[in-house]
Image (cartoon, rainbow, N blue to C red; front, side, top):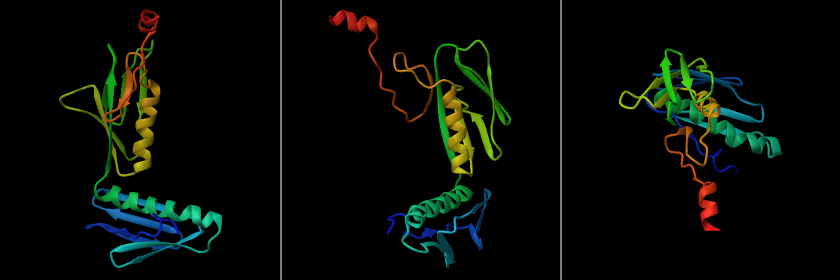
Length: 184
């Protein structure tokens, strides 16, 4: 039995979950999300909990059991609280400017990079520190993918630490050539 799959999903206050066949619709104060679950599992709402059960013990059913439960949980948390990722831009001359649904990045290349956020994702800058981008939304997958796309334009490099990184990311620094020749 899946350890994650057998836990019921608690429906938070102000959130409604509707199951129509294979389609699950979660509505809350921040918006509405839907998901068409796979036929290997069954989903039912009992009181203030959502229960996910698999139809048999086949490999596919076992694999989808915990996945479906966690996706439903992410939807419930997303429509009630939302998700947020923060990116820090480090480097001389590296900067970002958020404008509505898009962000313009200067990351040391000969050209600027324009990134348009997907539907349902909002990109803003921190008021105190303009080098921090805040990515918000109700869909955990879209927020994480938008943050990964922006980070992918210039990932942090290990020698000087320049680039785009998550706020809580630790970049392991390497010694350069000068340190290697001094030791010899």
